[in-house]
Image 1 (cartoon, rainbow, N blue to C red):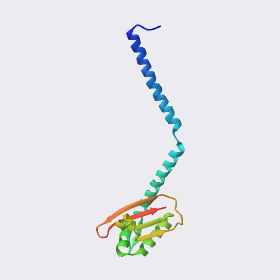
Image 2: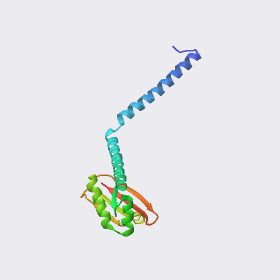
Image 3: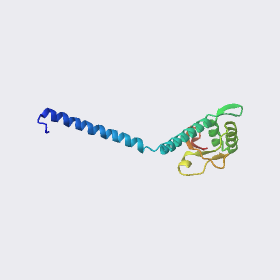
Image 4: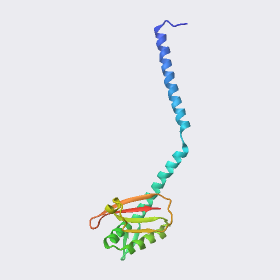
Length: 155
């Protein structure tokens, strides 16, 4: 039977369009669910979590309290003092103390920022791990007296 009523034809046509759109979205949703690779998402999440933990380790290191000449200072202040006086032994001593206190295994390197950006050698570097599989974090610190240093932590 062929409908001759124009109102009925328009209702049937709108029902057909609605059904096609609904099927399209259902198909898209089902395809998206089945094509999602949870293994890849787990890997990406783990990578982001490693970056988060390495950033937290670097912040913990920079704010670590240490004694210098009878004064309690933060590690970032000691790094500037060591860089300003070229005292590599002070850096190594305080960094080893941090490694032992926190049970950290990794490497900490201090660069002049311009040297770091151009691929130069670090001012100081200390490691207590042969191989580190953790993330890598960087921080740039500025000081009026010394200038700018970049701290790189990998662990």
